[in-house]
Image 1 (spheres, one colour):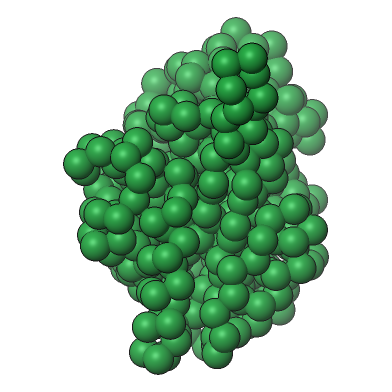
Image 2 (cartoon, helix red, strand yellow; image 1 turned 180 degrees about the vertical axis):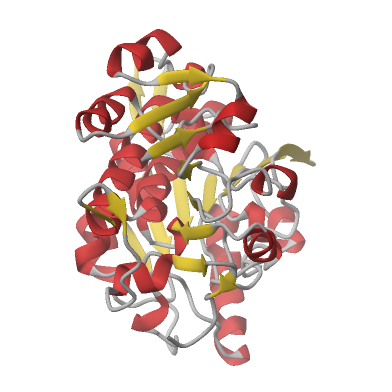
Length: 368
C-alpha cells in the first residue's frame, strides 16, 4: 500500500515521524512524504529517506497514494486530487461542519475522522484529541507565565516576600488537568472548575481546589465533553466564576461542547474586574471561545488584560506533538489494517465510530 504524508499548511506538526515510517516500510508499504513535511518538527527529509521514505512534491503524493494522513483536513481542491477509492485519515470535525463530508463523498474517497474515534478504554492509545489536549494544557501555562508580569511561585527574599500566583482552570478534562499539574509545578495556587463531578477527585489529587456549583447535569456518555446546563445552573455558575476570575492572576479555559459553540464562561464584565496584568488563555477559541472577548489565533490587550485565543497550542511543541500523533496513528492502524490492507469492519466500534465516508456514501450521522 502507498501511504502518503503532506506538509501541514500552518502547523509545526507532521502526521508520521521517521521511526514509524521505518516500521511501515518494514511491513512492506511504500511511504511518500512531501518535501519538508517534517522540517518544523525537526525531522529533515534526509531522516525520512534513511527510514525508507520517498520524498515527493505535494501533487505527486496526492495523486498516487492509497492512503493519506494529515493533521488538518485538506481543502476541496486537493481532496478531489486524491484517487477514487483511496482512503484519507485526518480530523474532519463532522460535528461542526459537513463541508469535508460532501467533498470526500464527491471524490469517492473513504475517510476516517480521528476526532470521532470513540473515547472508550480500548481506544485510549489512539486518542489524538487527548494527546494534543495534554500538550495544549502544558503549553497554556507556559504561555501564561511568559505573559504574566508576576512570578508564579511564592518567593521569600532579602527584599521581601512575593505571594504565589493564583491560577483558575475552567474545564478539568485532559487539557485542564495538565494545566493544573504544570501550574502546581511552577508553584502557583490553583483552583479548577468543571460541571462534571467526576473531575473533582482528579483535580484534588493534583493538589488543586475544586470549585463546585451544585445542580450540574453530568452526562457520562458525552465522551469527555461538557454538556449543556440549565439556566438556573448557569446563573449560579456565572456568579461563582465571576468571583473567582476577579481574584485570579491567570485564567485558562478549556471547556468545549461537542458540535456546539463553546460555552461563554467569562463575560466582558468579569474581565473588567480582573487585576491589571492578568492573563487569560482560551483554548476553546476555535469554537467561539469561553471568553466573550477572545479572538481565535490572536493575542489581544483589553485594557490591562492579556487575552490569548489559541486552540492549536500543541503545534508549538511540534516535535513531541508529532511523536504522539504518529503513535496514535500506529495504534489506530492495528485496528484498521489487516495483513497490510485496510478493512472496514463496521462491527468494530472503533471503525464504526470513525469511518465517516465509504464509497461515496456519507456514513456519519447514519445508523448502521
